[in-house]
Image (cartoon, rainbow, N blue to C red; front, side):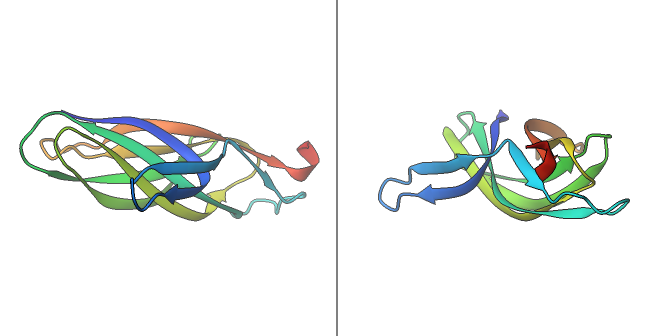
Length: 142
């Protein structure tokens, strides 16, 4: 069985060379946009962030490779793809995937979600995984 466990947003990920331990620096749940925002235009928020997703795999004897994709869901239900990649997990292992995003395509202030979807090799439909909330505010909102 393959299962996504978590998804976090942070500004930086540091990996220890000797132990492989990860440190997540500055968890992100809010970002500020310029004020005033351009009207009726897509804005690329200057926020750089890392999307960190954790995956669990049951005891199977072979490694498993499968695709995942990240998306940004806006306050009005709109969706923007942020990227896709192949993941390789070994048996009995918690795999952590880190994807760096430079700028987010947002329409303006509001509650956004960054989510992950995955395609199980045994199936044909993408499955939704965990997501993280991200509040986009203008500088005037404090």
